[in-house]
Structures are given as structure tokens and as C-alpha cells.
Image 1 (tube, rainbow, N blue to C red):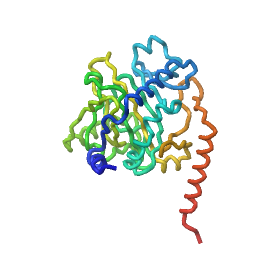
Image 2: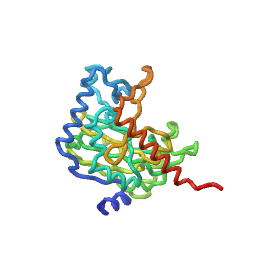
Image 3: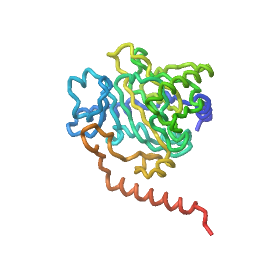
Image 4: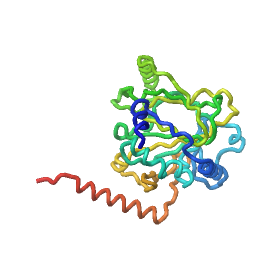
Length: 300
């Protein structure tokens, strides 16, 4: 991999891959999203950002569909066209080099509009089992208008020592988040860090460290879209240790699991796997156990 990429990653905590995907690749992923909205039996779960409600995409009121902002969760579980933006022969080697481990795609978040989310670090909410074993990418599905709430980030903020909550962990504790924000504000001030805006073009890929401070800029024109999809990746090492079900794909893996739970709707469904995928999972799991057994020291 280009040494300039790894240098940028170490120093600033992010990397931009301009015009990484073709119009055809982006069109295919957008078509999958359209099918999810139209499928009356879809298992996909969405978050209505206007009213802070989680529901199945098939249960969204048509009027709300037109007027509200939504986050569409985990399209990757259902659509190969979406997974191809997350794991492929072009991208996976870069992710593997930056993560220093084999990447495991664990979620996807699709947006038609800016998120409006405050500054945060991903490890607060998706805390990896091992330090540093999480990264994310942001794929631009269209050119981003500066009034539509573009991505904001703080180069170098990944080097800030993570805040420790009263329970001794670094996973977010809701009632202590004001203290976290004050800590981060002071760290940013002391280090002289300045926010930058990602002026994305369609097909651009923005890769960031789990500890990079970032958020959504203010949405100045609510009617303007900011179509994008975000993918998060854990490491194979952590995922194996947690006993997760991993499907091999393009040099990495994607996590097979149920969709996000919806309040009052019982257990969410997991998409079915093909016989080939189930066989690959069993074979890889067995190989991993054999390799692990050979690496363990002999007692005696």
C-alpha cells in the first residue's frame, strides 16, 4: 500500500480515496435502497431522526417517508450490491493494512440527508473488544452541497487519550456525556485542533479511525440531500473471540446476524444464508480453531 496513506493515517487519523467508486457501482447500491423501501416484506429497520423512533421500513407512513429524515440500518445484511461497496478487491487490502487485522463488516448506515449528529468518536457506542480494532468508512453517493450538513472532522484528534467513565470503561455512559464533551473540548483546545469539512464528490471514500472526533455539520438547507452510506468494521481477531458468525467475502468478512430490534415487535429476523455460505462459515471456523490449537503452548 502507498506509504503516504499509512503516514496520513498515523498522523491525522483518516484517509480520503477520491472517486474510488464508479457511477455504476454507486447506482447499484442506490437501487438496492430503493428496493428496500418498496418491499412490503422487508426485514430492514430504520430510525426516524425527526421523531427519534425505530421501526421496520415496511411500517413507515408514506407521509413521513417524504417529510422526515431517516437512517436506514444494515442494508448490507440483505443486498450484495451494498456489500460490494464495503468489501471488494480494491478496498479490502487497504482496510486490512490500516486495521492491522482482517476487517469484519458489522453494520451499515444509509442516509439521504445529513445526520446532524454532534461531535463524537465511534468507539463510544461501538466499543471494540481490543483497543484500535474498529474503523469506519463513509461513501458519498452524490456530490455533497455545503448547505446539506457535510461531514465535519478534527484531524489528529484520534491521538487524544480516551475518556474513562466512572465504571472504568470507555463505552458511553449517558448521564456522564456532558463531562466527556467538556474533556474533549479542552483536549481539542490544548492541541490547537481545527475542524475540517469533507467536501465529498460522488464515489469518494473517507476512512477514519475509531477515535477520530467527527460529526455532522449544521443542515442549513433542510430540503437538500446528502446521500451517503457508512460502514463499520471490527477485526477478525475480536469477532472470533466473541464467537460471531462471519461470512467470507473479498478477503474480509461480513457479520451475519439479526437486524436491529424494534421496540414492541419481538425478535428481529436475520436474512437466510445460502448453503455455500453456511459451509464456508463452518470450514473457516474449524480452520481457525485448528490454527489456534497449534499455536497454544504444550503444557507439561
